[in-house]
Each structure stands twice: as structure tokens, then as C-alpha cells.
Image 1 (cartoon, helix red, strand yellow):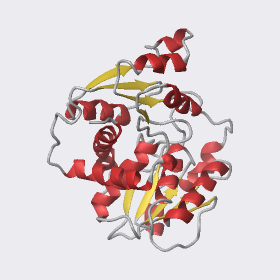
Image 2 (cartoon, rainbow, N blue to C red):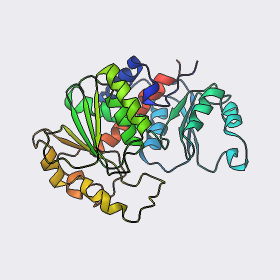
Image 3 (tube, rainbow, N blue to C red):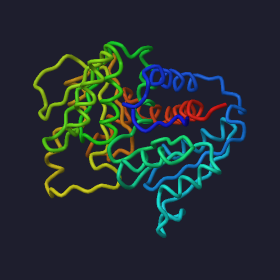
Length: 309
């Protein structure tokens, strides 16, 4: 059976933890043998814009000795009426894995995984960005040495990155995530329920609130994302005013961080002056660009895991 990565919630616990460890290990080096994929072909099909994730899977495929086959949003016959089911059946005859960033219903990937014979990797859907969360936890493993005991504060929209982080942190015993999201822009009830169930089983802690607390124990990580998720719009013309208190800037880093320990993370792209300020993302406590580089090694770990040798 094909190994799919559709959601953090779907993974067996040993696979989830091994993907984090393998991602960190690939980053530490030495470079893996180029024959690991042994000329396997990996389809990279992005129906939305991408800089880091798409590049990571293309370069990661090459570094592991495979061949990337890259499709843009207008390249396949789904644009002329062919069904996704027929498309993935056809691609299963050519490819050894298919990495997809979807533009439609998140259930599309599950349909493709059901009808095809090729591993499907979720490179972001509207509801979740699983490889981002795996990469972020690998980055924190490298930086702090371990995940247990870490406290993360996420400020901003309850988007697909926030959802993936909630599902991932809930699976790490002794790790805590607090999400600060504007009212009406938080995680879905279904995501919060899934995170709570995983936390009860595996020992992580996840909580969401819609106000900025007056006081809190220092967090090890302050994390934010672009307020307007790529490819989406907000109907409220005053939404930026509602988001402004959730900007991660010097004031928030000072209020909720420890100057000797706390790091700043951002999944990028950043909108400087909105979700964060330039002094924070370019400051000495920021690991945002090293975090971006980590995505290459996570792509390699995911491909190495899902494509049988």
C-alpha cells in the first residue's frame, strides 16, 4: 500500500516522530547518498503559488537521486474537464510519488489517494500544511536539542499552518502551543477537537484564545504567519485593524519572550509591517530563514519515507 502524507492526524506516532528526526538528521548532514531514490520520478503539481515548498521538493528529489516532473496550475487536462480521479490513475503509471498543493476542496487529495497507486504528499491544502509543521518541529529539535518542555506562542490567523502546528504539537509529550487568534479567525472546531483528542492520547497541550493576555510565563518560541493566507481574501474591510494587536514585534517579543532564549519563527512569506516588523524578522532572535532552509531537508525526509526502496 502507498504511504500517503495527507494530514498530521493520519500518521502513526512512530512515523510522525521519525519524520521529525529524519528531517533534522538530513539537515545535520553528511549529504545522503544520491541513490536513495534511484532514478524514481516525483511529480510536483502546484495549483497555487509557492516559493519554499515547491523548491524544496524539486531540489530534494534531485539530491536523493530522483527526477522531478513539475506541473503548473494550467498544465494538466483537469483544466479541460478530465476528472482528478482519471488524472491520478494515469499519473500512477508514470510517477513514484505525487506532491500536490491544492487549490480546491481539501478532500480532493483523499480522493486521489484512494483511486491512485502512487504516494500522495500534501504540500498544503486550505485546511492544513503538514510538511510545514514537521519541518518546524525539526528546526526546533535542532535549535533546542529536544521538543519536550518547549512552549510556543502562535499569534495571527488560524490558518493551515496554525492547524498543522496544533495537530503536531498535540502529539509531542510535554510540549505546549498557545494560539492567539482574532475572534472569528481561529482554528475550526473540527481541528481543535482533533488536536484535543491527540493531546489526550500523546501528551501535548494546545489552547486557543482570542485576546492578548496581560501576563504569561515566557515562551520559548513566538511564531506568526502571513495574516492573509496565500490565495484568500477577507470579506471584512476592517480586518487589518482586528489583526493589528496580534503583530509580533519588539513589544510582543519583550512581553512574552526571554531575551536569552526565545526565538522568532515565521513560515514565510512575511508582510513586513503587518504580521511582523523588520526589526524582529531580521533580528538576532529570528530563525525564520534557517527555518525556511529546513524545509528542503523535510522534503527529503518525506520523500525517503513515502517512496519504497
